[in-house]
Image (cartoon, rainbow, N blue to C red; front, side, top):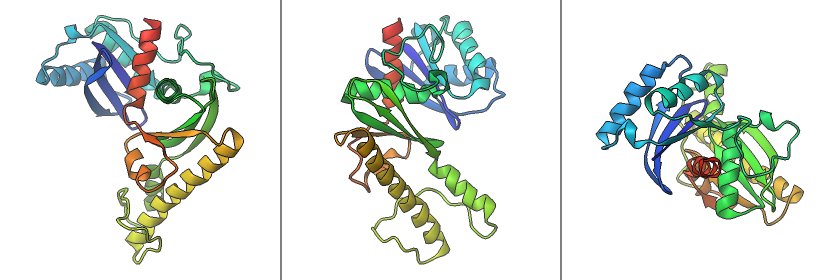
Length: 257
């Protein structure tokens, strides 16, 4: 089986993939100071509960946007899974796509992995909207090249900023209104509606501009934990794929095996 590790700013997602099937996946909050031993105790226990052992893993690949966790994750694979992991961004890794930006090394690993998976499954031209700690818009051309994109604050960051910067505004969770009313009748509704419909407006506005800039046939692929919430309230999103990053990691591993 293949072990994929997607280290983001909020969570690290570990998955076991056999062939093209995602057998298991688990999330762990991202903490810079975790040791190799802490990782293996956690993941080996979960693997055991699902009938797997470390010996079942014969390969690994890592995508990380959090440099402090890179070395412990590499050592985890080497020491306990007995394999040298492929690492997205290293000079030896071939993504299989042309990265047409000023400095390819600056592009987050997750953005490139999503572009690979989206182009393979849906074919360009397209844009991937990833609802994570940041909300990313990544454009793939008709020939499959990565063309760049946009990075916007994630919705949870916006909610946290409202709470921290305004003394009388409470901390609230992301919630989709059960109606199309935009005007809030209370402070809580005003915050919920403002953030939710504000993000819908941002999504629709940016996609409209990207289509004018690139192609009117630009397909829109949404991924990330909050993708389905927004996809249900706008007709701008063509596909929702929560497993896009894992698919991309599997494809890149296969290409470089």
